[in-house]
Length: 116
Image (cartoon, rainbow, N blue to C red; front, side, top):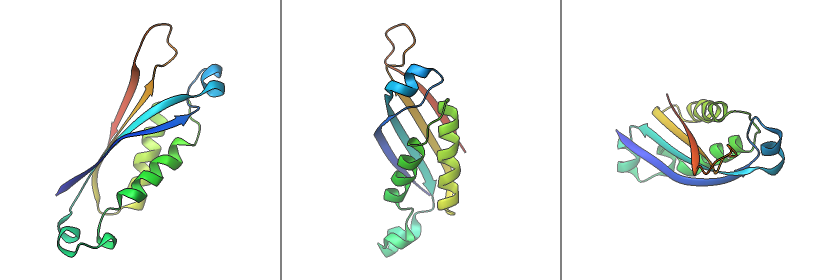
């Protein structure tokens, strides 16, 4: 078993329930952890045997471009797309943070974490 982690992927997107968020947009940080058996790629040194983290990044990027009201919705879409793309995936956790959300006070981020 191994863990592949993509940390602090930064995206600018237009997610949110409020009209201003959907017009102005915001920065988001996404962290992804994926667990899979990495024995074969460790032995073969062949990308075809691995859970390709470049492909995983492209999935996250694609899903972050689709507007959503809730971070929970984005997190579920990312997890579902990863499981479709990688049959060897045994566990995945996605953590999405909206930086400086417009909540009427000084807040660095709000975060949703989803595991399947």
